[in-house]
Length: 93
Image (cartoon, rainbow, N blue to C red; front, side, top):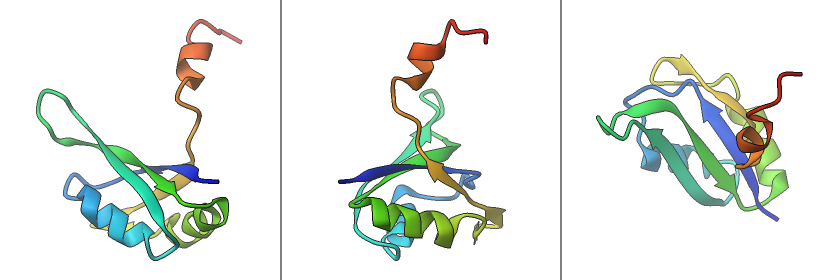
């Protein structure tokens, strides 16, 4: 079963291919998506990597969390479900 990771604190110079190549060192990458500003096309500094297995995702979190890429320490965490924000939008706790 695949696992989706949130990757943050990315430099604007980081490409999707570069991120895919890096994470493939931890295991097979199913998909890699950098989030970009729709007006400028420039990276927003975060993205998502879907690893082929939960084991590969765990390896990636340990291996790349805090690792520098283009002078910035990466943040690597489990991605929240896509509908998480929609479900909690009105919640004030």
